[in-house]
Length: 195
Image 1 (cartoon, rainbow, N blue to C red):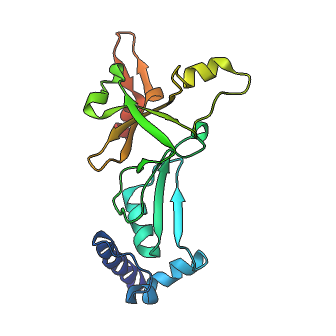
Image 2: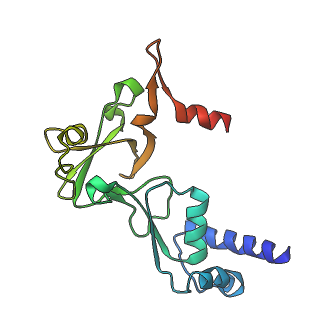
Image 3: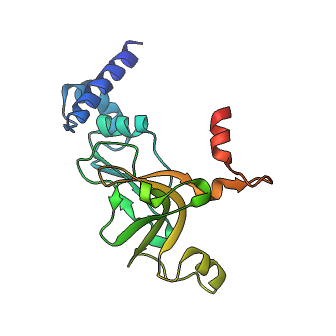
């Protein structure tokens, strides 16, 4: 019980330092408690990168603070050589996937049926650049669905530009279904209500 309390207290102290812009792994708290977490990962972790699925704010903050390492979150898909957005060094905020990488351009386009409008900084994420694939091998139909005539990859994800220039993924176009009455409904939102 005392060990758990000490670990929680140490984590809170380190998180407070992180929010002040201080990232370290040589504090008193590291020596007393956190070193066990670090040593379970080899003791030399300096950088972590995550993608494929969002990481909760609590987990991301805990790992950054307790391990005292850079922890980047990225966004992309196979069709754009895995990455198109990545958080930047010294950005300790959470809830976004970072800014576009230098190798590509990211834009948002309207998704009227879901009331996401690019003019309001929300819409379907589209990517163009040297990292975007040219086509699916021997599959022109799926290529035409993924790439428009100007070479923009339509990811199917819905994004929102934040005031600091980073992208937040807020929805997925494929999660929307049209009802017989003509209304659109997001099944994921209904699932979240019932959970």
